Amino acid sequence: MERAEATGDDCAVLDCPGWGTLLVTTDSVIDGVHARWHVDGPGAFGYKAIARGLSDIAAMAGEPRWAVLAACLPHDVTEEEAQALYAGAERAGCKLVGGDTAFGPTPYAVGTVIGKAHRKGPVLRSGARVGDWIVVTGPLGGSLASGKHKTFVPRVAEARELHETCDLSAMIDVSDGLSTDLHHILRASRVGARVDAAAIPRTEGATLGNALDDGEDYELLATVRPGPLPPFATRIGVVTAKDAILVHPDGREEPLVARGYEHGR
Image 1 (spheres, rainbow, N blue to C red):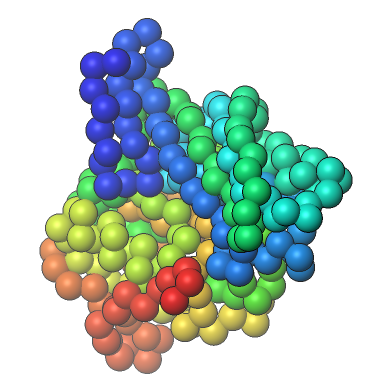
Image 2 (cartoon, rainbow, N blue to C red; image 1 turned 90 degrees about the vertical axis):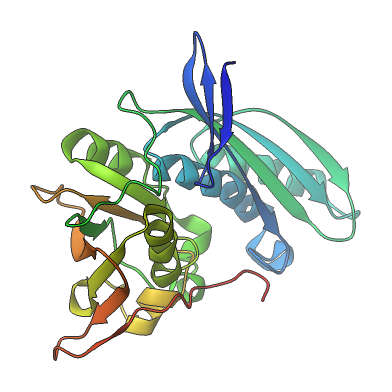
């Protein structure tokens, strides 16, 4: 291994001669914070622990290869519940190659996912350029209320198509809310943005506030050079030199403030 870099992005980037560039990420699912053991079930814990990692790999346009799951199980766990946890992890769609179990008062699961970077290289948060379009891969808002946060499908294929068909400059998965995650890109790239409120795709019943701030959507938020877009990508704004501005349908403008979802707060 020649270089190990914690980029501040969704994954650590590892340059490994003979292997290429590897992407590594770890995510946790804690009872009462990310899911509820006795309500959602152990399968949801296992699935989300790995699916969140797959979403991180997708955010850098990588290809997931292997996953490892470590879990803390309640003392009264049954064999069926333990099996359901790991079955849920495997259902996420990445090869599970190992893990560990322990017992304690608070159930949680920690998923580690390793992937390979795209041949064009990993997509970072820091590449957005003035004039780039801002796009999202699907509707936003209401994920916690609807339960989508437990069943979402990581946008791995969509990320690959964006990287192969567009001039993709920056990307992140929307886990903390559009308003907050867009600011992550803007801060890393040292740019601003104008976002068209009417263009933001929303899930049925979601308000603009939901779409901006709810979080746990796990769609992709990307910046691309102007040009043809895949059918799943919706243009919602443009990268500017400074400031983040939300433009309402009546032309009214206001600062786009990061008010996204914070786990456990």
